[in-house]
Length: 231
Image (tube, rainbow, N blue to C red):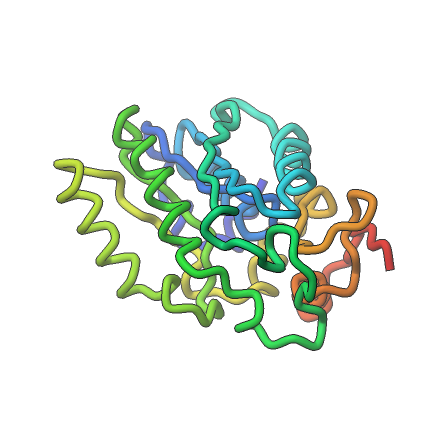
C-alpha cells in the first residue's frame, strides 16, 4: 500500500468507480496500480503486447507483481495485442542488433508512436466496457513528444470525438521523476518489476539503457535495489 503522506492529493477520497491502468512490467506502472487501488474502488490493469523482444519477461513480471499486491478491488489483468514488428521492421526492439546500452542517450530508446498505439488500444477497450478513466504512469522527465501534457490533452479530445465519448486520461506522476516514484513504492515488491530491453535468461541484463536508468532511480531514491541483474 502507498503511504498517504507520499501520495499527496491523489488519496483525497476513494471513488466508487473503475479505473483502468495501462501497465508494463516497470516501476512506474506498478506503483501506479497500487496508488489507484487506494483511490478507486476497482482497478483494471491492461497490458498491450506489441511483439517486442522483452515482452515475454515483462508480461511475466507484471503478472507476478500484480499477484503479490492482490487485494479487493484489483481486477484480473487484460492482455491486448497490437503487433508492431511489421511496422518497425529490423529494429533493436524486435530482433535487430545494437540494443542501446548504458552509455546511450535517452533518444536512442525512443519507439515512434508507442504511446499513441498503446493508449488508443486501451482507450477503445475502456470505451466499450464503460471504464471512464485510463491511467498512465508517464513521468515529467520523459523527453519524448508523445509524453507531453499537450499531447495527452489533444489525444483525450480526439478519442472523445472519435468514439462519442471516451475515458479521461489520468497521469498522476506527470510532475514526478523516477526516484520520487521509487520512494512512493518503497513498501511494494519492486524487485518483481521489470525494466530491461535486453533480458538475459529472464533477468535484467544490467547493461542496457533501461537497466542503467533503473539502477540510478533506486540509488537517487535511497531505496535498496533488490533487482537480480545478469551482470
